[in-house]
Length: 202
Image (cartoon, one colour):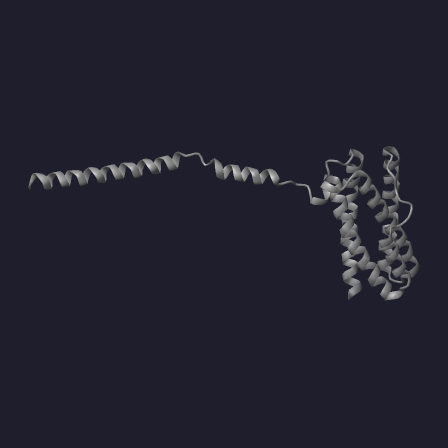
């Protein structure tokens, strides 16, 4: 083997050895490098998560008290109307339950509102007034069907409102406790209303 060939082979071996060393070092550096960017991104995403619903961030003591009062009054007045309009025992039993439970909740809300200087409406809002007027013109099966549907839809909204109020950090302790304590009854009303609606639709 000539001297020049031997030198060429040694040079090639040296270059290959250096390349392997460089690759190994690069991999080791990659493995040891802190993966902060991914973790940081995950942490940032986690910080944006919250157990509160979007509504719970916007509901205030006054807005909740107002909406709760209107909903409760609507359930009472529509229940009393149902007792006049229906001949269906299931609808009558449900209406009696609505009047009784919502009168009790309304009394508790009035007490809290008085202690916290919150204004409560003395009449229904336009939406519930229109619903009452619509139902007033119905009788028999037509009334039962529309009343059951209104109760199902209304209690879906009521449960969502009270759930939000029970989680809202800006809610006063008394109102938050009222919302949480009323929720089980409202959820039961909601389930009963959906069952009644399904039955009346046939």
